[in-house]
Image (cartoon, rainbow, N blue to C red; front, side):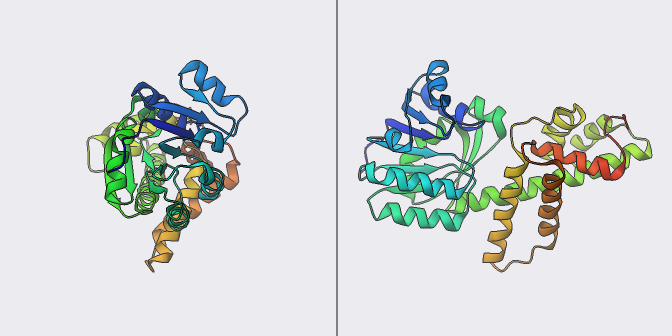
Length: 300
């Protein structure tokens, strides 16, 4: 039986990673962080605690567990190549990136040949729930590895869903975001139709939330980030497009027809092309507004 996890190397302390790593510190784990941005890890140590490392290999050396949460599976592969030589046999890698299931399986196989286990554990809930430790976590991997990872995951989330073998968590995350993305765009179009008809957009959101049209977007995004014109919930538009691409990739690999999903992905990609990099995903509402010649909330 593997020893319990005490030390964690946390690689990638961005919008999501920072509060997630902070919750591991609060839970009593010995946490060493690193990030691609110079000085960011040192800032974390000053404000939160733990230890800072100059790079992934330094962070991972001697760690019981390595958590990665970076933008893409390619970056996970790059990190894995750096840390594999310094990881002890029996170490566990938890990839919390919203990545490509096929690529994750390849990385896991390479690590397994060195005696290192890997699970995938992408998250849902955004920055607010990352801060409170209330994330939903979708995991894939061997049961024994998932059992060992449980205390680490429960320090960051309150809803842990075992989805299957390695890569299953990432497939579920991409499909979750596909459903979320479709609901968001449809809801925005409904609000625009209603406003042009003469309905109040904020009142429409209230009605949706009391009716069968309720979605995560109607509950947590429309008023908070669109009608408020804040567009700053912490999840980037570019990342949404990436996740939708992964969902369609899984669709192709399983020979599943996806006509509506393909249109949804193209709509989000059009928003990214029109708005440019650096925008929050809720800003995609602005493309719908531009096409309608209508700004939600009343100011044309």
